[in-house]
Length: 224
Image 1 (cartoon, rainbow, N blue to C red):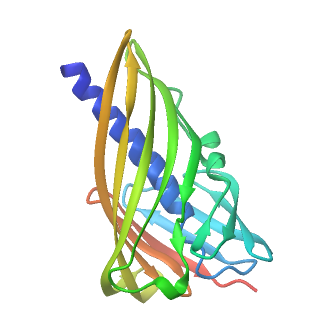
Image 2 (tube, rainbow, N blue to C red):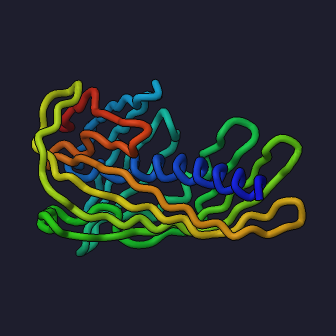
């Protein structure tokens, strides 16, 4: 039982790390001009940034650096924006030498089209993942699926280092369901967590918090 509780804790940590990477990627779609840049600071001292490096028709490409280092293409459909490149996140995410994450599939709309942004609107997306690593002398593998359920719950003026913004407030619920294989035993895992995100039209993600860490926009540079 003690090891099982520890395993769930490890899963929650890996889940939160991966979810942070997805959340970082998602909101950059409000402005989508070449040269748009965002810089962020996390309360744990981490800093990261994004830059749009290409725009073509109904898509654009973002280069990420900091928490993850990769390029991802975003594509617009009738419901909003999504990306076929979720796997790029998992391919580069490694937590030290002990933990590695691979995103194996994804679906849904990450950010809905602008006309849908109003109080009460709900949407979701999902991605599957596999992890491998060790805790002390024990090695483990985990597989599972994360569903992210979002709802716009209101509006608020938010002040961050880059200024004050009128934001939509989004409540996100992240649900991980999967299994862990360790020491010849397969353990079912179920972890639920949540966060609030604050978006401003014309700028993107302004702030996000999960109750433990808070991320804020430090600088936004409009594109061409």
